[in-house]
Length: 266
Image (cartoon, rainbow, N blue to C red):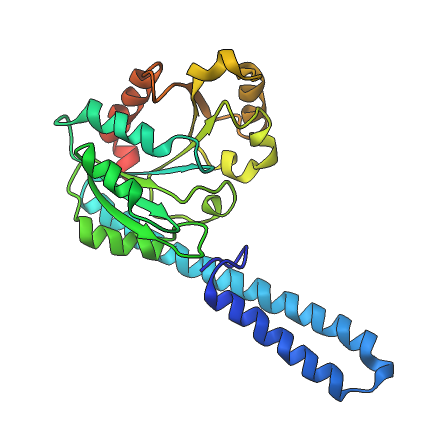
């Protein structure tokens, strides 16, 4: 359920029930008071919605803290991978699994609205994976990840959480991860950090994927980096190509550094 965009069934019912209440109220009241009552109910509706959102996010934070403690006890570093659809998250994971196979334990939680396609790809690449289908939901939440942890039972190494393709809501939901990584691609345009600042502000690392396509698209890596640093001066920008492997060694180095970091695990 998403309290911010209305993608969850419970939230939709909440909104519809409240609108039904308002329709009955207006029919029962005097015509001269309609305008005033509409404003009153608009304020009440907004207050109820904000309170509902705060309750959902507070519950998520509580469950995320539980996930984080569980991962710490297991000495697992969880990395939340976020991007728009088609930026190359799964392809990068396939390349990562092939490169780090045998070096340290790796597991993947796959988030999509429907299908098992990405989990199948991860398993074909030799990785352990659990698929979460969110239905109408546009992001993973801490409860979903907690259930996936029970099934995967990771011990040591790195857990990749491939979030639902979306540059909005995933930024708002802590999953218990140690690191947040945003993947953008050169086909998306240089302005994405400015259009979706919350997502890029939350990232420790921004991977700029598909640089093998730079000769064929109008894209400036320097302007993209400037836009990203305008939103998040601390973010590291790493250009790479999951297809050609250019830049991938630096990404693998980042993972090795974090897998042995007490800061990342704690």
